[in-house]
Length: 403
Image (tube, rainbow, N blue to C red; front, top):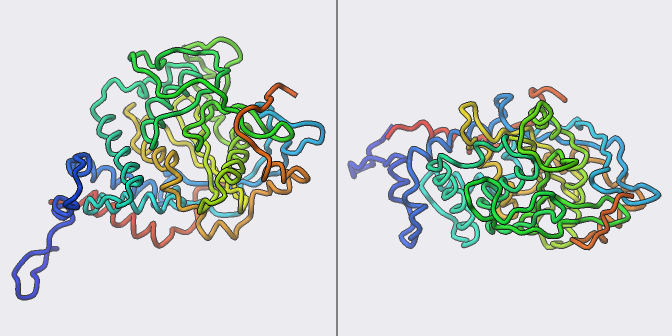
């Protein structure tokens, strides 16, 4: 409730009014000043409910996984990703709220949603602008190809997602598509006549002596993206019973887990100066996403719950957009592992890799790799952190306030 200031008789401004007047005078980008107030409330509800609160089974959570067995260190030869074997199980560590590894990103959103404060850092400001611009464009684009993603085959789906979602949310829209893909078109396969912002090229990572192979797409040399299924023959844009069930193959997916582990070691090798080494890969299946993360320093492997790309009304799921934005910009938005996970049960990959662990740590590479063939209940969620609890309350205050 508004209160009278001592001696002045001036009423305290509501958060909504503060947001209209508290933009930096030097801020000239219209996207930050003109972003609709009603949209801010809607997004605040999503952030508060789904990213900061372990409240319901619909909320995306992170499960910590542990290796039981794998072929990560085969004595005879290195193993391609397509033949990777990863037997994993959930650890006894409680599940984590999705936002627990993106405190920096949530803090950025909260600052903007509260009073339209934008980051002083130019790159971070650019990252925030990418999300806001994409959200506005998606809201007005009735023919967005993501709405009919399920009608395309796997290779087409992965290119459409890179071209119409991940690339548009990232700081740079450049990406490399596996040159071995059967479908190669000059334009985007979405059928709207747009051009792709990536190119076909080498996407191999790893080492011939250990896990290695081609990722479907590498975004800005920072993120791997893979479909959970690969076509064995020509690409067919037709739905089948098998295709409709493929989203279930995202969970505990051997190939994507292997890719995630290798990619995280490779990023640590290429960027040893990084503040943390929690690196993601994105798994795609039909109209769903799963995010995998591996920290090659602390050996923690995380798997998100399945996030649908479309909501119940077959509109693009705003939660999928926000979570994808957090993941593709993890360099700027991820806070790394929460302290509660650093001291928990690790994935046991160092033991799995055995005498080949130094190859993973020091001898991985991008490209020029010979890739020739050679659940626990939701009630066990971790304790909500003070930051996320406070952020959730503030998001809800924005979402449900009246002007």
